[in-house]
Image (cartoon, rainbow, N blue to C red):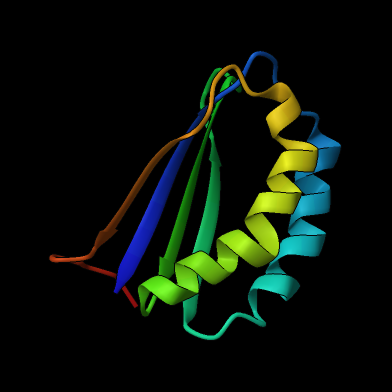
Length: 100
């Protein structure tokens, strides 16, 4: 299992309608990516920071999420609010737990 974690610091909070659009548009598109296990977007308590976690069976799933969805969607909806480029960490899971 592989994951990418992005931390995005914002100049200003993102409107709730952007997150509503994300909930409507992104899951169906993500479901089409082979090997993608999950993705989550987290908003910090002060609404000036976002965290994005993408989990895939293999690195190619992470790259497909970035190419097909992340780049264009983030550029349109999040980048205009960003204070700096995202901090990006990509790696292989070496210890995991999931309640299921």
